[in-house]
Length: 306
Image (tube, rainbow, N blue to C red; front, side, top):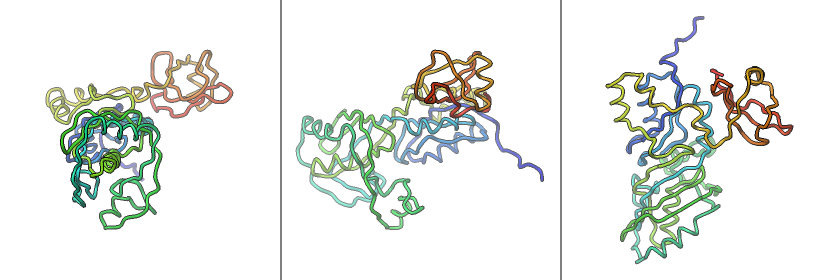
């Protein structure tokens, strides 16, 4: 039996896409994958259709480090519309209730935001990708079914008021993975006594990636028109850029030989715990290593190129 022909070309790297509003994360991924004519690609956790901003896309071997971006902290800028509760907790949903908005000042809002800072618990929204008995919650919600959702622990590292008006708040959120900004907006609105929902949401950071690194679909198309696939490839970031917070170790040729064959190695003066970026002595990124209890470094996730 002949092998099935693989479509697309091999592409390795990470693209910090500036996702536009009105398109799903998977829809944006497929658009970019077609532009690159890439054989393999994936995104690192969905952004809501209403949301814009940083969506790291991993191509080829970079998909092996995508889980570390999925688990990383995030940074958002959100606008909360006060006085209305919607079915989806954002502006795309049906308005379920409206309440008058009490007069408030920045001091009151700052005190409320402080109450949500730190380790908190959130009840996930029904319109989310979490599963209940094998079905996505948003699928159940669209069918008019609501199920009980246990609260989940998340961490809000920083929550600041950026600006406000009579019926809206703009907040800056730095948080752990799994934080629902829509739920946060709803809860803040409830504390103010009027309810609320997210009317605009932009992700400004994901792990080591920041807003100033983002590339838009328009920029990708311009690069392709001007310089072809080589110009697109030049916009990709290296695979190890996803792991900048982890310390690095360099192996000589002998140690690298054993590590890439699955054997733990003893590296002089290496860190004594945690995950590591592992490089060959020529600078090539080999993959992710993990320090064992006995101090040796074992392969955790190796790259094919390594």
